[in-house]
Amino acid sequence: MLPSISSSNYVGKNKVTLASSELQVNLFFISLYLVAVGQGGHKPCVQAFGADQFDGEDPVECQAKSSFFNWWYFGLCASTSVAMLILTSVQENLSWGLGFGIPCVAMVISLGVFLLGTRTYRYSVKEVKSPFVRIGQVFVIAIKNRRAKPSEIAIGEEACRTLPQHNSEQFKFLNKALQGKVCTISDVEEAKAVLRLIPIWATSLGYAIVFAQTSTFFTKQGAALDRTIFPGFEIPAASLQFFIGLAIVFFIPVYDHIFVPIARAITAKPLGITMLQRIGTGMLLSIICMVVAALVEIKRLKTAREYGLVDMPDVTIPMSVWWLLPQYVLSGIADVFTIVGLQEFFYDQVPSELRSVGLALYLSILGVGNFLSSFLVSVIEEVAGGDGKDSWFADNLNRAHLDYFYWLLAGISAVAFTAYLYFAKSYIYNRPSTI
Image 1 (cartoon, helix red, strand yellow):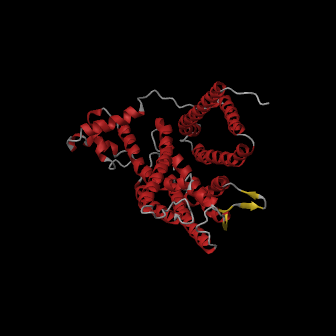
Image 2: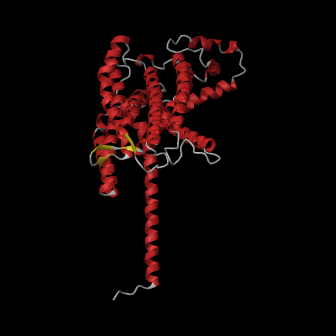
Image 3: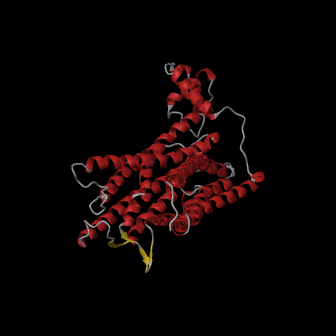
């Protein structure tokens, strides 16, 4: 005979379950927000602090600082690749708690190692006016003095021309801040250096939009293909991003130990190629990546039609996932050039006190690129998916047209790359000794 359960007991237990479930959801979202806040404080500062351990005025340490950005990104991508392979398997096959617990323990250990080196770190501490105040003051005073006669600031402009590393004719309107001697020549040149970053930041957004596709539509492509690596083992679609990390891990040593020495012997530059040349090379590779991705998608759609699978989206296309390997590898190599190049560029070209802010600017490129990618998708979905038509991003990928989207991104990237070349050609390095 089954024990009787009163309705009041059932309702009480149900309320406890609901309360527990709601608490878990709240804790989960709080955890996500804490991760976001932690990453926002950690990512820009850890790179800036690490690079600050090298003396930019010393030729040997200057070269080592450039290598630091390479190897920092190497460590980041290597650990991410391992996490994709191991932690996803742990979470799916063993326990999500264990899957989150392992990186938690790893972070505790890394914090301990970091603290052990406290006595050996270099710190750059200067008792000077806040750089935000200093640079902001230049813009405010330049605006106030916008009607000043040229003769009143001629002496200051002449002083600017004595600085060989800067072109005082660029953003010349800021020279008006020299009137009254509130701002120094150094303050004005710092403000100009910040303004020079804006075109580079803006033209890098084309690359960032392409960067956003690797974790979205590349994965969607892979999910429709035959992902059998060997009999009995099928790689998850999300784990295909492992190949980007693998390409980065393999190519960074090649770049640091083979490409840079050869380029250094040819160009006689400490870094082999300039930071802007490095960024531009990655942009060009990302355009090629989009072209390759479009061609592979055309091949996938053609295969679906040949086998009569257009209206069978749940059936795997008889086409190997290895067809996607070139676009993943190209994406990884492009990251080695552009992502690492942007990190070093925005660290080096801002005033010394704003280096963590400079790296935050680099991170903002990727963030804005993701937003722009989402905006493009929304607009195209609205325009191409009306009147009952299949949009470029239809749920049935065999009736979608990701190839059109990839061609569009290749075109946008090409336009952004052309603009980038224009601004890069006229860019004046803030610290020419480090390029």
